[in-house]
Image 1 (tube, protein in one colour):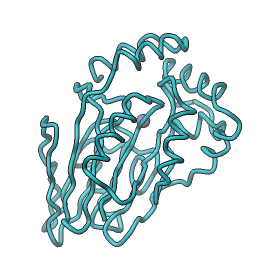
Image 2 (image 1 turned 90 degrees about the vertical axis):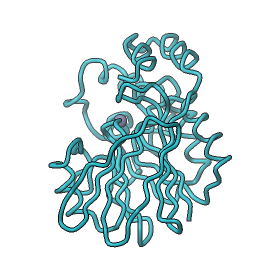
Image 3 (image 1 turned 60 degrees about the horizontal axis):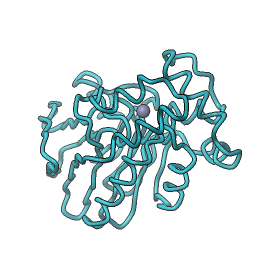
Image 4 (image 1 turned 180 degrees about the vertical axis):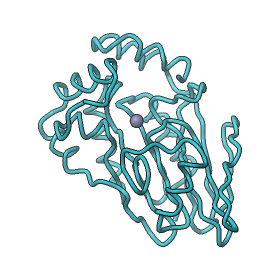
Length: 247
Ligand code: ZN
């Protein structure tokens, strides 16, 4: 199976549409979504409807999704995130709010090879940044490949012969990560709608479980259009500015 992998879309419709169009040319048979569909961006309702139309075979909720539908308070959020998430709560249609509220908590197994989660397989809200975080996550993961999001940083970790290594990150529009027999992997494709690794291009992945290969893709999208929608919506200006720098 070839899976389209989307995470941290954050209501950025322009970035999502660019990824969907690009993914169509690469072909995929099913999709998986790792949470944070909304929060920060100006198009929460349309983004949710795009994902519903995709009919992902597996989807988990993110921390922004939980607050945006009223399941949780924005206690751990900074002022900008808080104001965006409350704007989202007001903007969502009742139907989309209740759809978000019913998204499952990760981790979720997809098949014999793939498992998905938002933050980590042991805690949906935990962040995986370095090898130390990855060790615990790799132990908790029940599949050869665990896909995660939440940090908005593309990352890949490999557990082979008892050692965990962080695999180098590429800036190419497309990079391949072959999955070796007997090893375990933890892969974050990076954020569709709000990259924070200093690269403003949208990020997503395609996982091929027959070829045992992960394609990590970066792609340009109409950033200026997404920014002007953020400003028009009255969302904090910083949320528009950061899209240009990918921070
Ligand atoms: Zn996020």
